[in-house]
Image: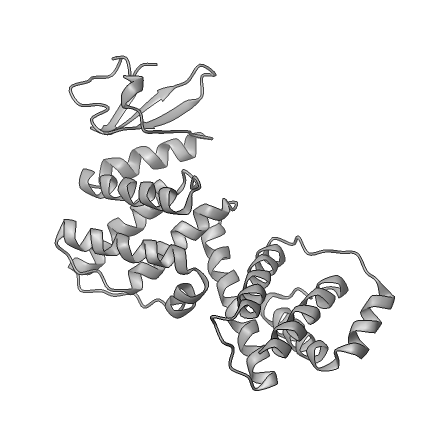
Length: 280
């Protein structure tokens, strides 16, 4: 493999044996090198295939505009997140997170702070990712001698969550919408029953997990289609209050997203609500 383009001292573009365009990352990978030189495999720390010319162009433009220290910081943040989460994140995070942090720094210089309306929910629903984001924020502020606000930890956490889920194009907005759905459904349940959930309880964690998967499937139009009329009628009669709650949830979803739940999802959600409320 030879260097086709140098993006900075640590990032180069090349082609693999399948003639696919590839980004290679590694400390000092391009130091003292020029286009056409052979890449030292022992220095490569990360590599990912560029799926199309648009992605290639985005990488080249971003890394040409963003200071090297910001790119290096993002790599350090991603490396730490992958190690702590014990999973590989989507390569797209190098684009999205670098871009976000760069403009967050530009806004800070101009005295502009963007509020994060989902900061509380992000901390509550994604505790591991939020802890990583807080550590990332501390690192950024210390290394670059800035004071980005806590709201940025929420945004960074969303980028990590989004990369874990490996969603399709437009998925950052989808991740935020899913978080809003989980928040609003929990509020509906709490108000209808007049209960305050114990967030450290196992039953609460179960329903939050179920709602997260449900919200993702709902937004992707992947809800279960099958119907069981007998079970549907049984659940209505056995758990009438939980079922009424689900009807309210369905009304909220139809009003907000113009898509109903479907009988199968209503059954599962009723059972989960009945369980969490009875345990609370």
